[in-house]
Image 1 (cartoon, rainbow, N blue to C red):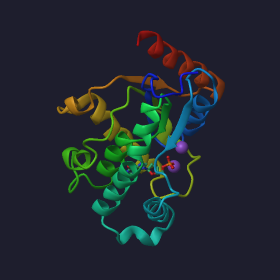
Image 2 (spheres, rainbow, N blue to C red; image 1 turned 90 degrees about the vertical axis):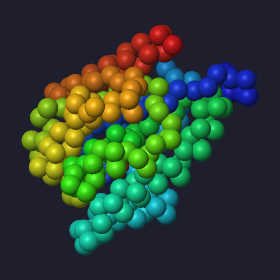
Image 3 (cartoon, rainbow, N blue to C red; image 1 turned 30 degrees about the vertical axis):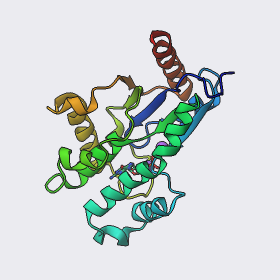
Length: 213
Ligand code: DGP
Ligand code: NA
Ligand code: NA
């Protein structure tokens, strides 16, 4: 075990995608198996911090709609910033950090909510300087917006999820400023797959990444 000061820096591995695509299940899985040495999981938003508690209230309390979209956006970003030093320390100590959502969600959900006042650059700007993942697994599901299994939180409607899907798509495929996001992204089509089938694909994708490093 190389959990000491001379150890190799760990990897930062991100799982991204729409609501209800199984991200949390797979992120949890990656943090429990032995494929990655000394894994640790960070889920965003982290609802346990003071900022996270406001975010949670925004997501669950319909009367919070009066809060400006910019305020909420900055809180989500803050929530990432408040954990980043801890994440850096983990990586330097050789831990492999698995992220359940991160900057991409930050951009896509806020653009979907209010593109008139918050364009890509506006949304991305407050996250500039956060660590870039070494590997991103993006879970795709074309039928997701027709999903009827959403919960009751603010963004969990078919219409809104369709908007977010469009924004993710713009970020990955269309946007001119790809230089901001020029990292290693693997798209995984999770449509109609069981948890175990996705487990296998995730395992294989991460293994290929490790082998190539
Ligand atoms: P989750 O706990 O992963 O289900 O996330 C809660 C909701 O918040 C989900 O609908 C996605 C959304 N979300 C996650 N990160 C961000 C972010 O940085 N900004 C915005 N506006 N929404 C986010
Ligand atoms: Na959710
Ligand atoms: Na989740």
